[in-house]
Image (tube, rainbow, N blue to C red; front, side, top):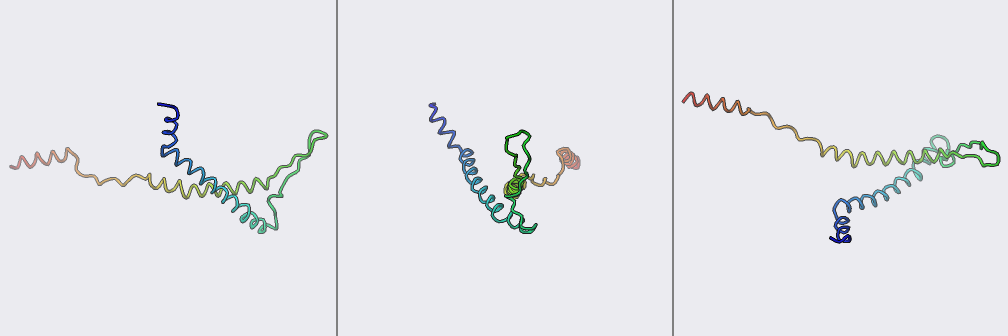
Length: 130
């Protein structure tokens, strides 16, 4: 089998195509969530807590070496990304994990009937009566 044919067979398997579609949709979903968080949620949260712009929340640390610039920790940006992650994780849990777990639940067990030994004993008793 040539390498190109083998690669084509691999690439056209259902799982590979499904994965590719999932990655593309996931990237688009990530952009939507990012816009939701940065453009809608964080400004509202900033407005509620007092006109805070999270993108401007930084902590300046002085340099330990003379001549170097100070270190800037952008914790506001981190908070925005954290909210973004929580929304994505919640959406994946609600729309992927929960439905899969629901489908995996075992079917209720069939009601127990008489065992083989009970049936054989019943047949024996019926034969004794005849």
